[in-house]
Length: 116
Image (cartoon, rainbow, N blue to C red; front, side, top):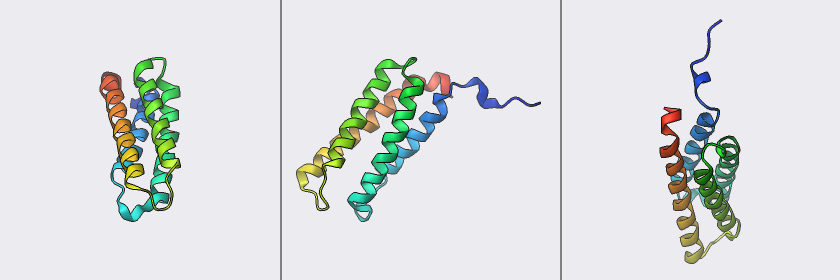
């Protein structure tokens, strides 16, 4: 029987990859995606972040806490968008999305030694 290579890595490494991909999907949205496309991508980011946080919070409490708060803020600001959002709403969503990208990068940097 052959042992899988991934067995030596913590479970959150796969969760990290999923979240990274969701965040990339968020940053690659364009105007034609519309508010519904944004909301659906944010839901994916939220779900992947929740999974990652539950699997990694004991090893990385401060990084996962930052992910939780940034993703919650993004989910809230996107949830408040109307179908034709104002410039102020778009600015808030953009700032919250940048915060998510930053908190996920911090987690990636902190967990690189265990996941690479």
